Image (cartoon, rainbow, N blue to C red):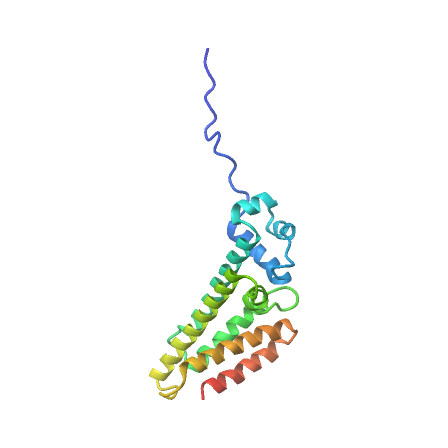
Length: 207
């Protein structure tokens, strides 16, 4: 008597019914809108189109998911920063203007109230009590300062800035202005107002 052949692929389990990057982006949106503490796993799972066990299996607990969301946001924001700061065809003034404009585009990318910078808007609150979040935030701020300082050094080499310019101080000034723009965006300032603030800052830095 002929035996039935086993079904091909039996026991391999179902393929994932979600895209990890899309799910992570949806989770990031929940954290961005509500903050880390107020974001519930149910709301995150619903936004990601997953149930809670699947969410945990894919990303770990809420804390691990938030760290992944921070990294995801940094990849996007940093890519926009680098596109402006590493464009050798731009003067320092043009590069800094593009730098701020790129971040403003991200800060105003939501459908509702402008959310500002995801890291500045959410991680600064949690960093006080959470060593890992504090470490991630500190690392990203240091990377931002270093990127700006590298671009300012190129401006000195090109004769756009004085040779004795304090690069570290100017880099921190430029990044601090970005953080201020983020906070002001969350406070309801218009994009036009913030773009004008950025232009004023660029003028000061490029003196």
